[in-house]
Image 1 (tube, rainbow, N blue to C red):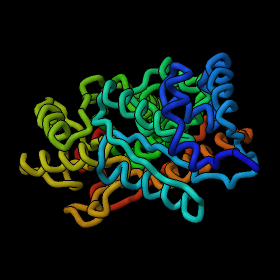
Image 2: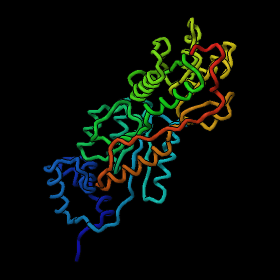
Image 3: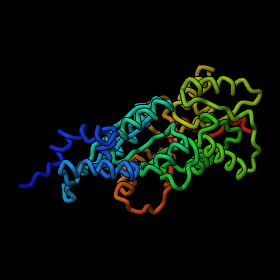
Image 4: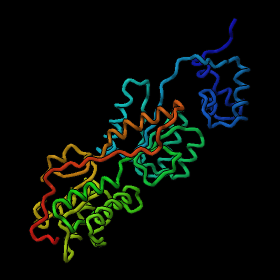
Length: 346
């Protein structure tokens, strides 16, 4: 008579006993059963010894279980919604479970939430704008946990797979559009200075000015907080300058909308007096605001699709063609940008 227990029966009846005998948690026993690599050899041997004593033999030809993917996002909004939508599209037809956690851009929250996911034996993780430090991410990799990072705050080593937009060339695309319209005093509203996207988009701004033979004017470079309110505050300052800008490039659409609101509050017109361009194209409302916002289309859905595809390759131990994938942005010209006013200096 075969006394071996099935996987389902075993997990339901004796995991607690194995954990007690081995002096480890039930989660650790489960991780041993599922073949996770972040268990020491000594612990694994001890657990397997007690498993064998109970007559349980893991069945190597069992049908594969559902792939469980954790998705860490700072918050729920249109921007992150597009990435999630792309990820779901890539998961269509795959036997997968998608578990989303919201971190509110808080380091401790993200660390704790991710740890809970790991205790649920997920197969892999997708991070958007993670608060995890480079050291935290490298530690996860050393534990053998597959993960992909999209839109990282900072540059990450080649060992960590990333997917993001090519920010430098995108910024140059926006600047070339404004320069082609005759603008020479072009202000930028950046994000927080320590963000990688801010650094790269500012680099593109500098490169476009240099290519046009224009000097950098520090008074035209102002930091925002990604919010419409900060865009409005920055423009109130810019319009108080003795020689205000004729065009404004905001590093996201929210700040661009705040900028247009401030311009109009000062009795000026967009784009007749000042042109405005944003970044992301992450709201269906942008073509319908007045004026419709010219912006750079951030390929957010494609980022989500690729994140899932790359993660599956990692889970299946397949090699990656490249670890840092950069996607191109597209310029979407609407009515918030126009020719430089007649009094422009060339």
